Amino acid sequence: MRNKGKAESPVEAVRPVSNLPRHVAIIMDGNNRWAKQRKLPGAAGHKAGLEAVRTIMEACSDQGIETLTLFAFSSENWRRPETEVSALMSLFLNALKREVKKLVKNNIRLRVIGDRHRFSQAIQQHIADAEQLTAGNDGCTVVIAADYGGRWDIAQAARSLAGRVLTGDIQVSDITPESFQSTISIGELPEPDLCIRTGGERRISNFLLWQMAYTELYFTDTYWPDFNKEEFHKALEDYSRRERRFGKTSNKEGE
Image 1: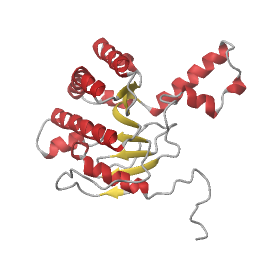
Image 2: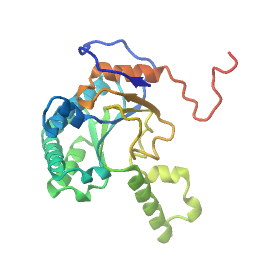
Image 3: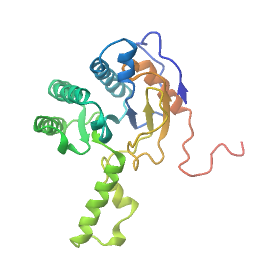
Image 4: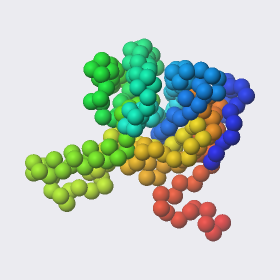
């Protein structure tokens, strides 16, 4: 589904949606183009994007959605201009410092997935602190994919299983889709039911390649900073009308 344009005004109350996804994943795209449209520096787009993150986190909590995974920074994003990467790292660190108390207050559990080694020690420490402080929360789980790539994720799971074979902990025959699932990032969480990509592109860009085998995809032209509760509701409504077969015959055949 491709949703054209953005809503003219936010909606405070929306119709309830049946058949909600348990896990929503979002590729947050369009921050730079949003800023360019307004003749603003790229950093302004990323700051506006952070406000959209807060909005959608609140919407997920309101709707009772169990898990929200946000693609914040890909493995390939290190190739962007140094000034932009520096601004993103500063924004990420400040968000970790400022938002943790709100997460605790709102009963949200934070998880961060990806290869953390290229982040500064300060960012790594604040990630660990935030995860620890929110570990006991049992509301919505918010997963931030940072320095993350789906191919990296599959490779690290394969390395882990291969290491267990070398130590004799498991046999080669024990490497199955189920054992891989238990080793991949967020393998213990429900697989994404719905993946939303903002900004008009129609691809998943190396995001959760293993986890999204049967995920429903929703694409919108709306830039991420403009993706409000009404736009999110449109995505949920579209999802609720789909029939998920997981390889089985359609229930509607023969009607």
